Amino acid sequence: MNAFARLRRVAALTAVATATVVSLTACAFAPTGSDAGSAPATDGALQTVTAGKLTIATGEPAFSPWVENDDPASCEGFEAAVSCAVAEKLGFATSDIVWVRSNFDSAIAPGPKDWDMNIQQFSITDERKQAVDFSSPYYTTTQAVVTTGTSPAASVTSVAELKNLPVGVMSATTSYTVAADQLGTANLSVFNSNDDAVAALQSGQVDAIVVDLPTAFYLAGAVLDDGKVVGQFPDSSAGGDELAYVLPKGSALTTPVSDAIDALRADGTLEQLQQKWLADAVDAPVLK
Image (cartoon, rainbow, N blue to C red; front, side, top):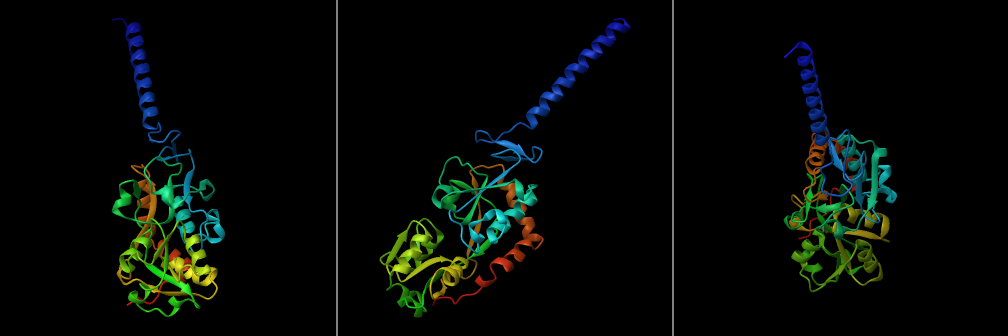
């Protein structure tokens, strides 16, 4: 083989090698998410439903102290602030967060989702894990009873006394699980939302409602006339329910989101945000 032929052979092999590298690189950064339209964000490091954006769902409406003024984009309120901090850890600016709304039941149901992560006080349970992923917990709460000063439940100090009164609770929640376990179902009224339960309390249909402790303090102080937190259930006073983000089953974001939350816990950010937004919801008597 003469020198000219050897040069042509080297050039040809170089071209083939270059094409192979380009092809492999394209495959390495191609979207691999299961949802149609899924695309990588932050230079291909993360899979999100919209390229370069992080889509976070929350409730409709979302209440204080979790979200202030039903405006999660403001990063005001505990869950809104945590979400903005998590997004930053993941490499997204606040302006790159797309906030959408979903109801509670559909979020934890099997099937495709049109959001990357969902935050609205979801308790981690084994049953729900069959349909969705959970992140590391960002908060541990308890279940409490809230009423009004004129209700027969206002003077209650024990679980036994509550069993004789009509009590309301939202369906498909840990609040319902605890209420049914502690009070039975004979005098338990089940509602589609906490809004409906509150309306039932205000109209006298029920004498008290069961919600998580921070929500109980909010309802008592900002929603109900002469509201009162009666107390928290004894089985949830130690440890409590772990609240976490819900993600689609098998999401590539589950581990990165969990890592971000763990980092926020380690550097003290979660504790700071709890003190800022949930300071009023740190104590309530335990029902006997």
